[in-house]
Image (cartoon, rainbow, N blue to C red; front, side, top):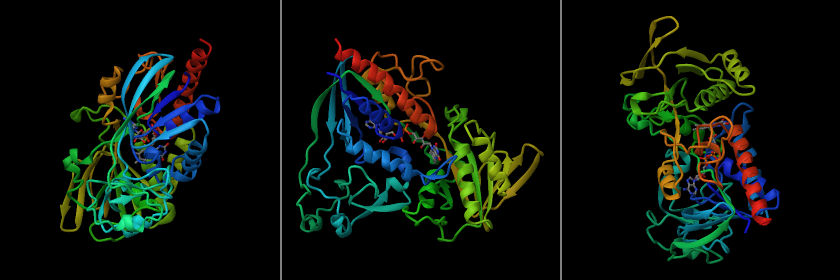
Length: 426
Ligand SMILES: Cc1cc2nc3c(=O)[nH]c(=O)nc-3n(C[C@H](O)[C@H](O)[C@H](O)COP(=O)(O)OP(=O)(O)OC[C@H]3O[C@@H](n4cnc5c(N)ncnc54)[C@H](O)[C@@H]3O)c2cc1C
């Protein structure tokens, strides 16, 4: 028995699965969503190269799907882990998709005919999807899923489905897998900006989050790649980013730095200024943390493109007769400034995956006080958990960007591979 179970198929889990399988070890990749890809699939471009996110993620997703040693289990979660390193038994719960995965061709005829529209979580709530849908155009597996909560059972999708792949009834299934080791890559959750009420998210329509901006900027997103005000559909001529929303904030028990928000705001500011040099872009910040390879140069590039960096945190965002206003004390000059942007973007922080507590409790894996998964040592053993044979990578253990998530996925893969080889030779 020398398979590895990887839980969570974002970029860290995908990298771990590919590296393990490329060394001849079988992998079961467990993903609770109907597609693999994680948060990276929602991003438009990625810093510091400005690569199109899906253009670099999608080939890896396809490699996973085609790999003879990787089995993907979507709509699935791990219910129980028993045993010890070399000999784990993992119980998987597969939630109903209401689609026959073998016969669905992903043609999308059912999606076109479905009359129900609901908010689309993949578009961070600013777009709509149907009650039967494909999570996004490059989904892997390339098949649909039915949302039983919103389906009105009109029957149109059954009539139009050529291969007869839609199921009226589908039940939760349970099965067990055997594994020599386990890699947890369950990722992060995004701070709910509504919890910082002073910034007006979900109250003022032209206050959006950084993830909503990513979806707007994406050519296959809900606005076709155009930044639009949700209030009147107008293109904003002035945009203010507010940094550290849900990060470095002891008042809401989130003292950590989220690692990626400075760079993602700089990235989007660069993209906006390059496309529309007439748009005024201001980033209100506490400190700019541009610590990675090429990151400081990226920051300089933004300044050269005319992005304004204003050191100071606005106290709130208010509606006024001209639209919105926010007051900021520039901590470099002690001058108080009032800004009247057309659009405010809240750079929301990264926190532990919302179910990490449950995972920790269920699998007996200790967490940090922050809720991220604890590793053996923060400097010299950053992928082993305190449970032998169970490893963790990507943002499940701390906020990280994509390059670091990929590196830690590879690192956890190597540890899991060593366990598998030891088990084989027992
Ligand atoms: C607005 C924004 C912009 C960003 N821009 C950039 C950028 O330009 N460049 C960059 O380097 N980084 C960027 N990042 C950071 C980047 O998103 C992360 O570094 C990266 O996506 C982390 O990947 P991951 O695999 O660790 O986690 P995730 O992408 O969160 O993947 C985790 C996966 O695990 C699944 N999962 C969770 N729990 C379970 C469970 N119990 N069972 C089964 N599956 C489960 C999830 O559904 C998900 O698919 C940005 C982040 C944000 C918020």
